[in-house]
Image (cartoon, rainbow, N blue to C red):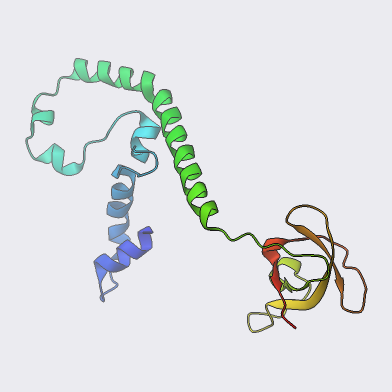
Amino acid sequence: MDIMHSIRARLGMKRNGWVNEIPKFLWAHRMTHKNNTRETPFSLVYGSEALIPVEITVPIEKVLSHSEGENDERLRTNLNYAEERREMAAIREATNKQRIAKYYDKRVRVRTYKVGDLVWRNNQASRAQNTGKLGPNWEGPDKVIGISNTRTYKLAELKGNPIKQAWHATALKKCYM
């Protein structure tokens, strides 16, 4: 959920005073543990966790047992481990991305076409016609005349004129005529 959505939800219908709410949302964003890294953005940058304002004003064990010399030593230790924490967070993030890609790839239907099939070309991929949002999304139909790679196809217009560029299967759709 993005920050602006959270601000709108918190303010409700009045919509006034959103400028005063931004620091609170930014602080909450920096102090929240992210799922893919299991770290807060603040701790990745500064090497230690921050105290929230309530922890400073309300007497809790962490604040009561504070000693300046011990705190400096802990900060130096945390800074020594900060780079290692960043590397571990990067590894966890890469692992999470691989897991998501594996989940996605498992459900993707591979489109294959044979020579002679009729296909539509995606107008956004070609950008041949700038027709606006109400224009056609697909161009063609065209005929597959060759397969250059496993998912890349050479096309020709129905009249027989070859199309210069090769087309990836994700930018094509089968035409049933």
